[in-house]
Image (cartoon, rainbow, N blue to C red; front, side, top):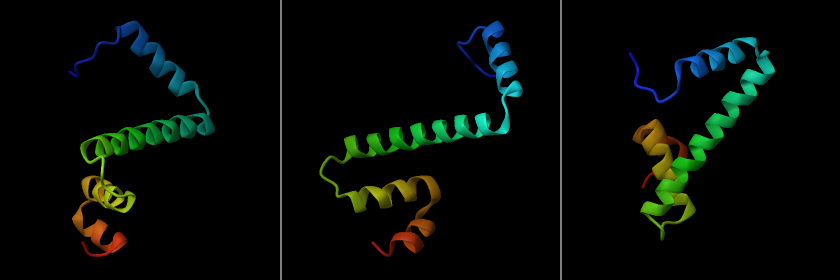
Length: 78
């Protein structure tokens, strides 16, 4: 069982609302969540390395989330 701080009645209502949402609404919610997670990840990288260039941060982001091989292919050698 997952650990949660959401009251079971509220969690059930959330599931009900998601099931009732049309595909466009579900996609919009997923896109918004994805955008937020990316923004928070990039913000954490910037805080950890405040003097890094955008290219360095891009590479670190790709390495962290997709692996070194993808970063190398996408962004070139280090």
